Length: 186
Image (cartoon, rainbow, N blue to C red; front, side, top):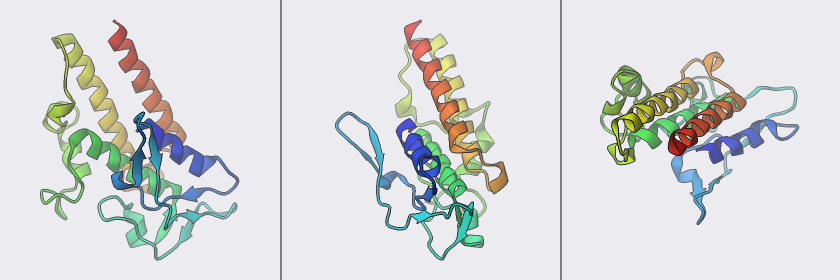
């Protein structure tokens, strides 16, 4: 997921005019033989003019991954990609798609995860991700999972102004990575 965040940083901040992907979802992330992720399918991407932070459009992404403001206001911005990234983070660690039947108008993937955090994190995490050797490892793993899922929630908050920027996402992901590597070396 760090590779995807790096790609978003490049799109959003790596050139004079930000590029908004508009359809970030798991099927638009490709993995090579070294498990390096690449963001693909720029068919509905938008380039924002230098003077604009958002643009109006009729283009919509994929249900479950699109930011609420895309549908309600038709406003496309880099924060919409952050929303989609947050949903992808939640999906990656829960193994639940935002379009599953258990998620209705009243209850989304985001809401489901937030009801269990932080105390019952293991209720939402995909058990296939857990391969720890001892109790100490499990505590460290739970702590990192809480941090990752909370980051997914921060990215996918409904209020645009409350979403964090991609540079901050990368900073938090790299901190989690360092912590995981440190725990493995102990």
